[in-house]
Image: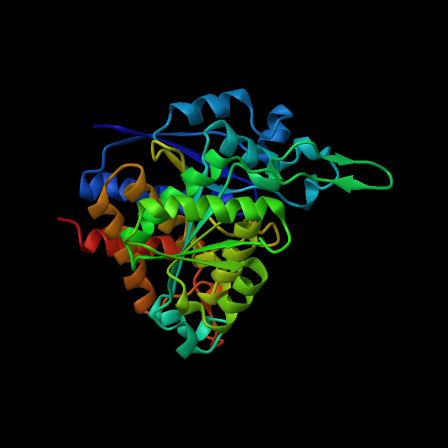
Length: 357
């Protein structure tokens, strides 16, 4: 079976990190028998510059025809002054909505070699393995009405029962495959929409008696992530809270440059991306860390293509490179030498080739 993949490099460091990950992809084709067809398209600021639209119709059509999408990053200060609906980030929001990518999976696991790079003491994060399941196509980012006027502005947080039920079910199913614990995060002591969220998740839990469900207010969850993060297994939450909590969890692992993510629809077709931004300050300088994008490729192989052995191979290659002491600048805590984007890509490819059948 031939898998159809779409590459969306985007802006800033996006072309560099996706470029190195495409090299890893082609290594899997050459050495592991992966059967894929790839196409590339514009999104974000690059698409706005070329077509006046951060998500051109041609890109959206390719996305809908693909089995999975590998995405880099969008945005940068050069587009801050344009109309809000034409900003690069709108392209990403629109593609998530167009493909109904409602479930965002954000793993935060600590590579042992990077324990010293965490913002917390090593003993607090050693063995960290959290999965944050963020609802991605509802909530305040998409709620209507929204308005900005001269003397006021407002957004609307809305969740339907079916939106909450489907993200809750995805989270319960993931918890079943892990340690069997799910924490639902909300602000039910203040927000009616969060009361509704909590009641709905509690009702869904009746279908998953083997999973232990708990609830936590979002402010407490943020505090607990930096106080005792290993208490969590799977966290499920809404769009806004998930956006914030997943970035907190990212820094527990040593660098936001290490964390992948998956955004899936009902059919497990999805968009895969590193959680970091476009980093325009280092774009084009061979300084970006491509490992989160490579780990996003591993998630793509696992969740959308069902190529489990190849996903394991990529993750093992990344782990071997880190165990060997290679670090990009964002991972370097001891003041020693660091390697660039291309050199890190070379190292992962060598590790993959050494384990080829």
